[in-house]
Length: 175
Image (cartoon, rainbow, N blue to C red; front, side):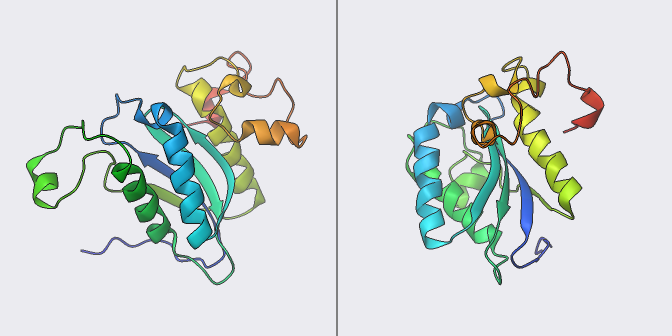
């Protein structure tokens, strides 16, 4: 069975990609490996990372693909497999993964959403940047080191006090 995905060439997409072990902290323990793999994939298959946050067990990102290109599945396959090849074998693997020669690091699927308009884009950027607060890792979004919020702050796109736990409206950020 083939999973049907949106196919908007040159579009912007929001992604959620999870580790198989949702109690793991592998993504932040191996953040340099993840960064290296993403840069390598971007060189061969260009895309813009508009916003991104990496948490211990999952990540969220908004990518914009080049005009005429909608092939984000190949990019994610290369990122996930490249990362998996560069980390030690320590994860639990079910028989189905072993029989297919798969590691057990990532969930097989990921969630994507094609960004519809400017407001949709803004809401997803805010969701990404607020996610470490939502999960209780920090009380202020700018205190999470693995987030594009720092670029947004440097470029003057947000204020330093944006995304504080005590001022956030939980109804605006669901998962």
